[in-house]
Length: 174
Image 1 (spheres, rainbow, N blue to C red):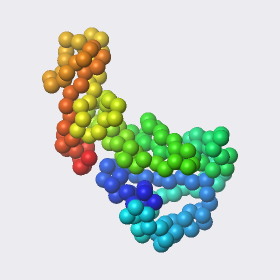
Image 2: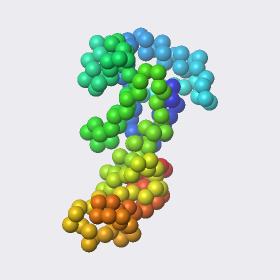
Image 3: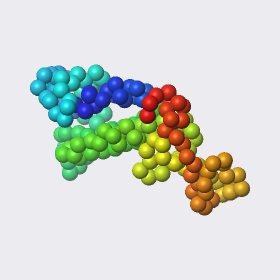
Image 4: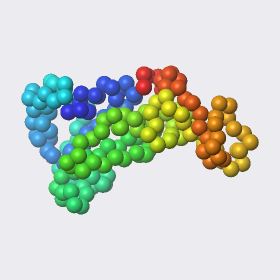
């Protein structure tokens, strides 16, 4: 429901969504119809899911990606999100069946990975667009502190990176 409602927001971030479920194609069709025709939740109503959903009844793909987890279920996949802006799987978030996903965090991870790639920097804990970023330094770089950076020690230097600059470089409003 939420990915369906926020599809265009993710597409604006150059992200294409793909769903995977261990349920059958017919089950997907019924589920999508119910979401569109019957569910109204937190301001989301008449939601059309506009991205592909793959049926994986044999659980081959779900098993390969670690979505069948002992202790949760032997026949149901946990909720998992894989963020992959470079074609190399770099971020995975698993949620137990009973815990809803945090879509703002999923968006933050996507924008964060795109920012890392675009600017050659690293991000501190709890980073949000507009916060300071980490300037990667090596031990022999101590004398080469980049302009505008503040170094706390040789391995930890930060610099401002305005949200607007990120938006200009990534080509969208972040």
